[in-house]
Structures are given as structure tokens and as C-alpha cells.
Image (cartoon, rainbow, N blue to C red):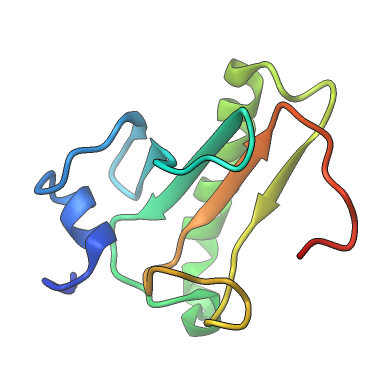
Amino acid sequence: MNAPDCLFCRIVAGEVPSTRVHDDDLIIAIRDIAPRAPTHILLIPRQHIPSAVDLVEADGPLLGRIFAVAADLARSEGIVDAGYRVVSNVGRWGGQSVDHLHIHLMGGRSFEWPPG
């Protein structure tokens, strides 16, 4: 079920424009409008899940699909050899800005550790 006031639900529904780089029955992937790296793609489930803390064991196939698509996109973006980062922020202190589960795929530059 989707939330009508959720920005990402509206993007999934096509109500808000985005640059899609992947679209299937479980997820979409879009270019981030405020990229923090040369490659910055958001992988968003079609189903409204507020954050990673709301995932349950039955969501395993969804997570498998997200990570498989992330790997495919990393290959097509040419960032596999140098490496890339896959991130899910949870809650305000974790940096989550939209209350809809999404995974950031970022690459094309070096990242430091620890982040933030």
C-alpha cells in the first residue's frame, strides 16, 4: 500500500518527474536530484515501507532484488572496478530525509570512513 503524502510514492506513481534508470515490478531506480557523487542513484521499492527498521523476514526477496539491481547499475555506470557505496539511512539522526525505504548507490569518487 502506498502513502498519498509520500514523495517517493508519488515518484513511483509517476506523479512527480524523475530520471528513471531502472523500473520493474518491485523497484524503481532514479538519479538523485542532489547528487553527492558523480554516480548517485536511489533504489526505491514500489511498496511503501517507511525505513529499514520496518523490514521483516518476508521482505528478503525485495532486498535481494534491490542489491542485484544495484550491482547491475554499478556495472552499467562503470563504477565496479574502483568501488562504490550502498547506503540506507534510518531515521532523522541516521540522515533519512524521506520516510520511504530507499537505498543510495554512490560511486565515481573516493569515500572516507567513517562517514558523516
